Image (cartoon, rainbow, N blue to C red; front, top):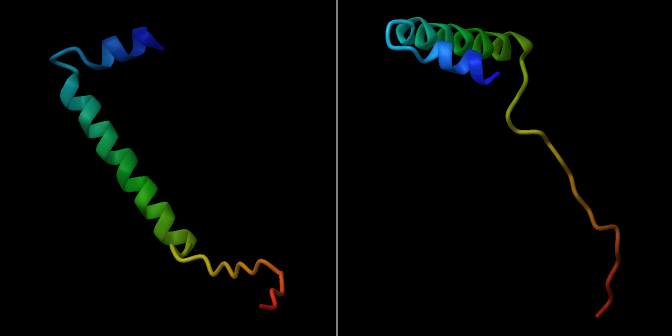
Length: 53
C-alpha cells in the first residue's frame, strides 16, 4: 500500500490523484442522494425505568 501511495503522490501524477478523489466524492454524494437516507434517524431512547421520588 505504501508503494501505491508513493506512486500516487509523484508530482506529475498528483493532479490525476486529486481528480480521482473528486470523482469518488461526487459518486459517494450522488449515491447518498439516490438512496434517500436521511441524516436524522428517529431514535426514541427510553431508559424504561420508573423512578418514584
